[in-house]
Image 1 (cartoon, rainbow, N blue to C red):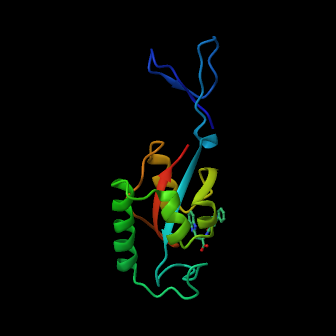
Image 2 (cartoon, helix red, strand yellow):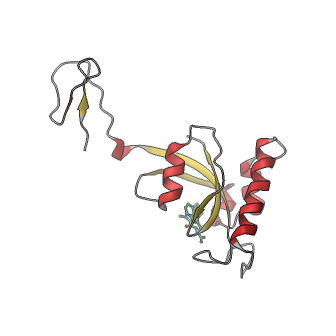
Length: 140
Ligand SMILES: Cn1nc(-c2ccccc2)cc1C(=O)N[C@H](Cc1nc2ccccc2[nH]1)C(=O)O
């Protein structure tokens, strides 16, 4: 539900103002694109993946792995797409972790809020969802 905010008078209104100098920001249509890497653990909603039929590592171990991979990306030793391809427990590993474009309401809440708060090109810290521990790179 778009609303209108007059940046000069600082008034907001629901009904559209007249005039030519109006830009609307309907946040419900906003989309982002990310690539991610998922390290699952024994508390994951589905503790299985293309890499491992039965994932036994603990949540703490998964967090440590994600932190190590984060350091490798931040130091330029590897890129997220490279590491997603070999290390991610999500099927998107086959697409170098690319999740494509998505809007609000489509992904698990912590994943969505992190993705929408990243700048393009920015890598998240480890993010925990019901699926496991993610590293998220915003690509668009
Ligand atoms: C939402 N989604 N899209 C794909 C996907 C995308 C592109 C290519 C192939 C698979 C996989 C999934 C998915 O939920 N996978 C889950 C793991 C997972 N959980 C997620 C939560 C948020 C974002 C990505 C996530 N991936 C699983 O395999 O247990």
